[in-house]
Image (cartoon, rainbow, N blue to C red; front, side, top):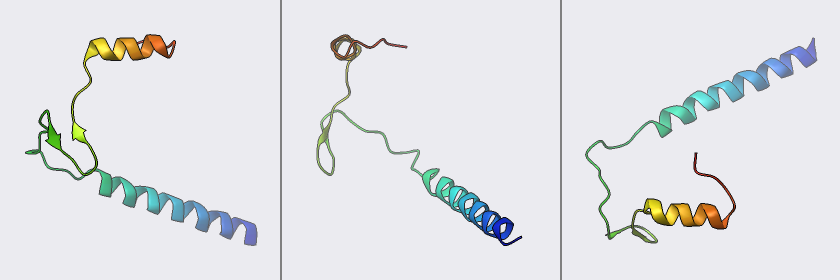
Amino acid sequence: MKYFKVCLIVLSTSFALNIFAQGILEGGDDKYQPRVGQEGKDVVWVPTTNELLAIMLRTGQSEFH
């Protein structure tokens, strides 16, 4: 019986934390749109072109899905 209670507590806690984390991640601003050359915290944002992506996938011997 004690094992059942411990399992129930662990499952309930993990479920509650999962729901809480999903609520945090769903935030955001619909008005925000990144621009090429926009400065970020550590880097400048520049999108990767499809041609460069294909080269990187070939180099890594992977396929584009």
